[in-house]
Length: 211
Image (tube, rainbow, N blue to C red):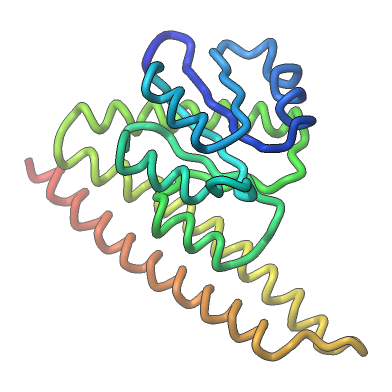
C-alpha cells in the first residue's frame, strides 16, 4: 500500500453517487478521492499515489473498461475494480481480457456490503502489490489468482443468466435464440480461460516450490 491509509479513487459520472460515496465510506480508514470522469482520474494519478480504482462502466468520455485498461498499462500495481449495473457477458469478458480487472461489483450497491467488499478488495490488492515486489514468480502467481477468482465469479453469473434465459424461452415471450447462443459462447470462453489459468497457476506454483 502507498501509506497506512490506502488511497482509493471512485469514479462515476452520476453526481448523486459521487455525493453518496463519502457518506458511505466516511468512517473507513482510507483516503478517498471521488472523480466524475476517466480523464480526471488520469490527472489524479499524475499527482497522487493510488492503491485501488473503482470505476463505473457507463461513463461518457471514457468508459470504465477503457479507463482501467489505461491504468493497467500505466500503473499495473494499482488494483482495478469495475462497477456495472448491466449483466452482459461481453462486458465481463472485455473487463478481464482488456483491463485485467481484479473484481467486478454489480450495482446497485448496498452500503454495508460495499464497505465489506471494498475492504476485501483492499486487502487482496495489498497482497497483489506485495507479491509484485517479492519476486518475478510471485507476480504472475498473484495475477493468476486474482484472474481465476474473477473468472470463477463471472462464470457463475453467466450460468445464472443462461438458466434464466432458458427459463424465459418457456414463457409466451421467448428469448431470442441468438441471445442464448451469445451467453453460451461467452460462458464457454470464460470456462476455457479458467482451465488455462488453472494450468498456468499449477505450473508456476510448482516452479516456485522447487526454488
